[in-house]
Image (cartoon, rainbow, N blue to C red):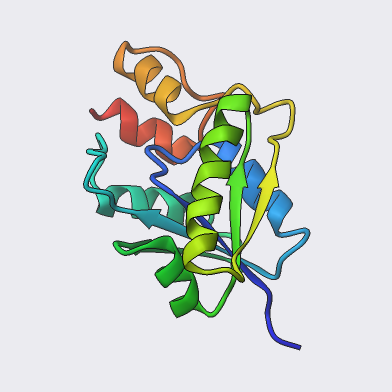
Length: 158
């Protein structure tokens, strides 16, 4: 039987315990999760791509079922290149759902076989967002409860 792979695209700026929660739960459904760190002309992440890749690799280093890659093309083209038709997205709020539903529609218009798997976060991590983690870290706040120790170390160096 072929391995069932799902792509979890995003900027992961930084990777949080919320992201890790979704990956862990997706591994209960799929054989492999590919964390696909995208580049986008309309976003300028505060952490460079190489560092985000390294941090994700550190966070998931003990699970061979998680692969970390970057991509700079349409998600539908990346999925087809990967030989999968599954995309993982986390939904925390109604706003998230509206945005993701629109993206799903556009992507399905380009790749009709594409299937989105929407997962809500576990209640213990539902409040975590990369934006809020960056803000707290920027002002010297304690982010240890929100991210892996490697991310704490990386953000405290900034």
